[in-house]
Image (tube, rainbow, N blue to C red; front, side):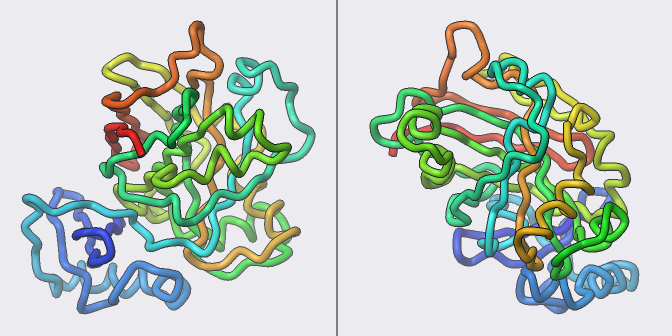
Length: 283
């Protein structure tokens, strides 16, 4: 299933996108696609309602698409998780996942405007596969247990300000947590529909120029390992988001470091998960 939230910021309503592209109103099943919905069998209830033809159709014209989950309790990120990206930044292959946190308030819709922070000269792009947790998870015992707590997947744009990230602190948070720095969506695609998360192509273009063209098979630490690993050090709650890293092709690693400027447009996609587009503006 493809779950999404539509409407103005703060007024989103839950919906389902059918295989033939129709948009169905999910409000008779749930008030939102949040942690409670995911943890209480909401996906199964929604599937039953769709199959029974119980959901009214929505007119998508003019409807904004928001983040497929409301503000998550936490956004956990894994850095340097693609071999080619580690190489382009001059970093070695990490022996353990490189983990950092991102302000959950950065999460916005997939087509919302993204703001370049004041004083920024090094705002960068990163297309990533996001994992959305569907069940409370602590001390998971390996990959099979990890798969059981994953509700689904989405496209995440882990926008980064490299000077803030690398020069202003020994931690990465300053360059990762600026407002609007995590467009998410357009859909939460349930895990059963995605299948193997290590068999997905990722793509990103800036102003029509292809910059990233990667594949999740190039991950150093696969999704199941990441989820299990994180659960040894923190409790993962339903609705939490995990950004799993980006492939090569970021501005930081390109000749001339063509960082983002006001008016630039970024298009990104992941196989089976849809696409995003953002135009960048000055904060």
